[in-house]
Each structure stands twice: as structure tokens, then as C-alpha cells.
Length: 139
Image (cartoon, rainbow, N blue to C red):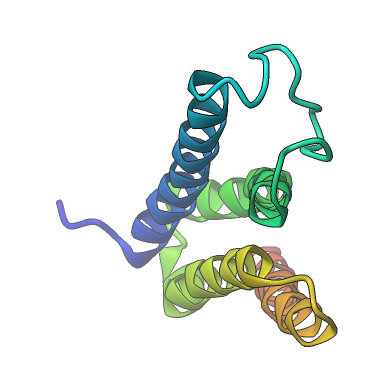
């Protein structure tokens, strides 16, 4: 049975979150092994991580995880209900917007990149809202 675009997007969203975890673990592991930080010294919000990239990485990962439950719930519902015809057309765009938002977050926190990040987030929210309306039969 071929993988629907909705299922592929769902797997992509999970894979992206996992990749961000691997990057964060790698960075933290290197800091510990180099003796720059103690293994139990990392703040949960990443605020004491040396370097701006490390701090942005922690936040980008948290942001991906904050949105994943909503995205997964809608995609899983569509898959389980056999309604991927509703979600498939925009599934790739949802995944692309998630990747775009995270990458903008990792690159910079300048005003331009914050606006770009917001644009990526807005696309995701708009797609989810549209899907909910369609899946509920309201649009």
C-alpha cells in the first residue's frame, strides 16, 4: 500500500523533530566532553548554552515539539478516517513550512528572520485551521 502524502508529511514532521534532538544531543555532548559544561548544568530553556546557535537550537526544537501534537492529531485523524484527500494536497506545504520556520530560527533572531519565522508558523496554522474546517464538513 503506497504511503499517502499525509502519512509522509507526518513522518517528516517526526523525523525533523528527531533530527533537532540529535543536533542538540551532539552539541551538548561535545560541550560536556570538552569540559566546557557539566552534564547536569544545562538549563531546560537553553538559556545557559554557550553560543547563540545552541540557544536557538533548543528553542527551535521546543517549538517543533509544541506544534507536533496538533499537526499529528489532524493528520492521524485524516489517515484513520480515510480522508487524506482533504489533507494530501497541503501536507507537503505544511512540512515545508515547519522546516522553513525551524531553519529561520536556527539562522538568526534578527527582525527579518523573526518575521520569516512567523510567516512559516502562520502557514502551518492556516493549513491546520483549513483542514479542521474541511474535516468537520464546515467548508
